[in-house]
Length: 106
Image (cartoon, rainbow, N blue to C red; front, side, top):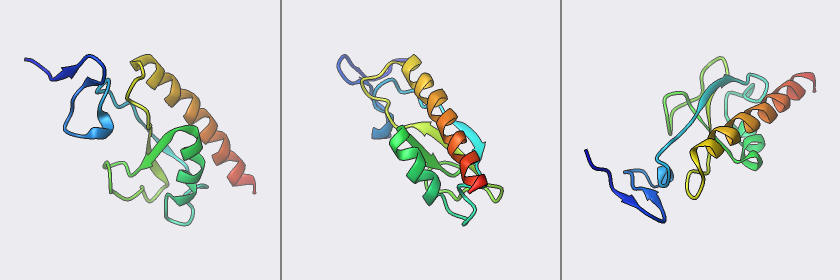
């Protein structure tokens, strides 16, 4: 099997957001305090500066879970190594969960 690969840009995929390594690492986390209004707006406000994307657990354009479960992944995939993607996810989720805890005490 051959895959389309550019030496500068990495693997070419059908979705431009996955250009580069071709790897998308994500986790599903419950953040009920940041999604208490039934939307992911607050979660995106926190996640954006951390370099993370927030979406429903069914993928793009799907709603968040009724219990506040969302899919979190790093936005960067181009010009970054696979290990850096996983590291960004780990560190970003750690900070996101701290914001979730703080939102619960506010």
